[in-house]
Image (cartoon, rainbow, N blue to C red):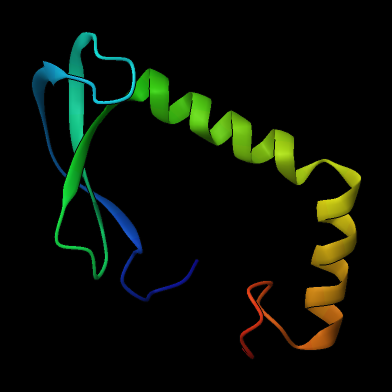
Length: 81
């Protein structure tokens, strides 16, 4: 695992309202490195987002672009590694 600082992190968790499903849940305050704002998300919504990432990653166009990025020296965003 990478020892660098995380891009996305949970600062704290407490009862509140999820900003994704708008339901009362145990939510985590989520921060993004370099972004001054934070959001609140419950574990169910975060799990659904993770499922969506997996679903999109298993589609053929992603698999082809990932192979090109890995062999072409790019990180997939057009930036050299």
